[in-house]
Length: 322
Image (cartoon, rainbow, N blue to C red; front, side, top):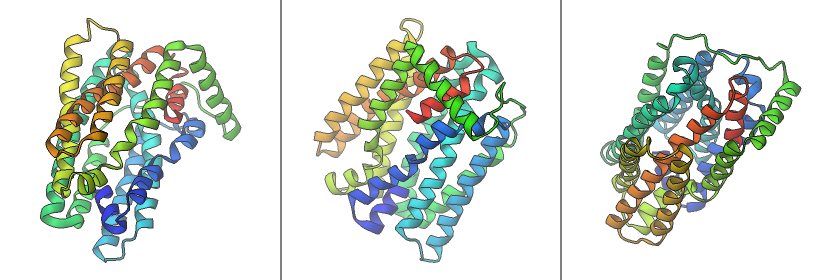
């Protein structure tokens, strides 16, 4: 919805792509200095705060759009703010899993989380495209506000006092801990491999998501609902990928699944870049989604299993940096 709105405001692929930049720009800083926050507070409270920040951001966008004063820089600022919140939320949320369930259940927990996310990736873009077609971008922004409010309500029901075993004592200590996390990752060849593949995927593969509105309108000649179908195709691929992983998990290692899935996503994207057929693009994005499912599931699983309890938050911070 935000990408389509950016395309409507600017009519420029460059400015649409920059929305993705603003959303991810905070990640290097959070990756380095995040432990000063993530190791100091209870994980439940931190997740609630970040979700409240996201709720406030989308509410402000909705109000600006309603009063017809929304400009591109508002989208950019909101993307930066929500990106900062997600950069703190993501490692904190996943660091909760071993505390709630134990390390032996980490892959199962991430498997369940990815099934839920895949269902959202299927229904979210589809409903967004439909809502934009029926009620315009204001309807889509209002829906974002409602879904964010429901998220905060649901998360408030978590009952845990989980926090990092050690607290960061300040800025310099945070830098030191970030350096320790990097050192720890470089000494563990499995974690290092995950980080290198993560860098490659985020550099060369995943930026396509920010440009989907441009592909949809300018290359494939479709409107907002067509964009929703493209996003939903990737979500459907996520679901199929997780079902496939569920069947082969006991037969193949986590590292094998992670590597093959990453390669499948990349090779499929090369095919997508050459497609001018809407139907063919949908089919290719299903394959991309299958690869993304394996990448997303095993990326965190491998690190959470490999890292010690004391280093878990720091290594997850390193993953955010990557």
